[in-house]
Length: 316
Image 1: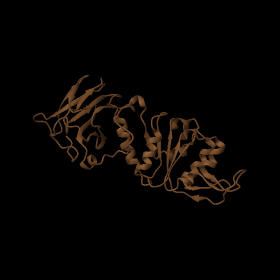
Image 2 (image 1 turned 90 degrees about the vertical axis):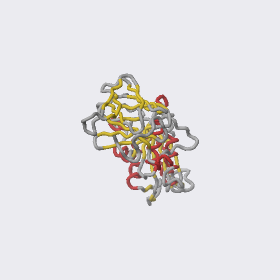
Image 3 (image 1 turned 120 degrees about the horizontal axis):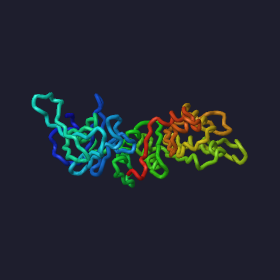
Image 4 (image 1 turned 60 degrees about the horizontal axis):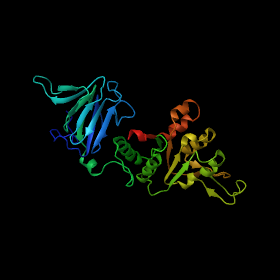
């Protein structure tokens, strides 16, 4: 049994407000929030609502039905789902009688543990401060109900407080742009500008002028100086959508900006210092793009300070 402020023992079964899971692996504990109601799939697969990196856990091991009451159901796992915590006479305090489920379900009490393979999980209440102010950055006009999306927006809320770059990954149409805007809105730069650029919407010949700007007479038709989007986002956030479509030849120029935090307009001689946060998004597998030489590895590492993966619509 785990005992801390968030996991009071002997609580009533089935009270399903502001609950979370404590996932115990060795000496480390990870926490996963639970929705007020719904089904939460636990397992090793990337599509699970709560992903557990343990080889003894099946890809889709079990599902937690968040009620009330709370019920855990095994999904035909290889190593079993075990519930119960009654101590046997004469055994150590850490020894419990566990009942294995086989395509069955059992009710779980708050403060009670269950095992997925070798991983121990305890259901508990979130701390009072978390209940009063949920760590979720979903905007008021976006309804978030799926457990995977609740977990994503809670992760995004924590990422928003940082100033490092964020890479948003996900299929087309899953809401990457909405997540980027809410990252900005919850960040310390919320009062600054939010600037978007779709890297796939402009031909390579216009990308440099759009991002870097130009000085007067830098080229035919440049009748006056114009700042680019990098300068326009100074003090705020620049969202680079479809970053995977950025031409390889242009990637080195963007990398230089990320490293030096300076921008040189086309036709200019003096670099201008900029202070902004980069958020990028793509539906491509950038690691695979790096492997085949279509995307710079150093740029990928610069952009991928924090990665947020938006679940596909079919999994919500």
